[in-house]
Image 1 (cartoon, one colour):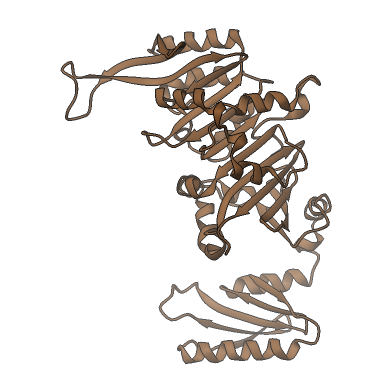
Image 2 (cartoon, one colour):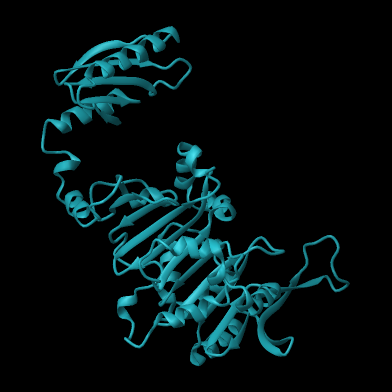
Length: 408
């Protein structure tokens, strides 16, 4: 259902527009048939060569609205809702969510969060619905939303001791390189691990050491208990399909538990020298599936590596990723112009943020969340100019900035 408000003194233009529309449909072999619904004259036609449930439907409602639909039932339901109190404008939950949003905006979106999850069906008006305020800057679009799910997906800063500062956030991000395709920071790793699947995302998209493989489930449960510790998780390009770097405020007890869990899962805890630094690798042998394998027919499977850098423990999915992390402080994500610009709309450097290089991450994002593919198709002229996407969490509110590039 698509509804347009008719501008003052533009009723004749609206009528002319509809007449021209139906003249074109008739020329294409889809002449309109008139019917009356709730006192409104409605024109509809079957599109040639389309499934039986796809139609053209339109109506001129008084001198206020032009309404279109692809199914006459949708238009009938819309007209009936407008004449009763059973419409979104009268819904208490909708009005409460909208009232909490910034008053200055160019648009408003209201949607069921289940639409963003794979295989879910939208439900009735409930806590699953969120409202988004849409704003505009010279560099892109801003989105402001209230509480999305009742829990944070990247960490809840309200539970932190007062002595926690943004300086620790910066220290953790030092090991995320400027070329990172995706970066997530927060103060509660358990929230991130626990929310991944709730968002409808596959565990296979996670780094192996965070539960991306079946044998890492024991490690995942330990990471889930890693609370109130600043962390940064970055996805980078490498020789493998995806490499990951996790830097987290160090907890010696947790590290011992992780090494023990890796051993129970069948991995060896092996020291590895990287220059003058010694890391710990979780490895095991498995039968090679490659045509050209070693003489023994075995190859090494790496679950992950970790090493200490001051008060930070770094975990990576490969040796190359660890070398990238150690070199990152010389040119970290914090110094990258695209990251700085993406963070600019936020009033403060929030401790819980998500950053994505959209050009690099878009194919994986579309595969993980089909709804994104739909948005890309519908808004293709706009989406092809998206450079990066950033989000910041502030209490129960989420602020998003979609930065455009190559607008000339």
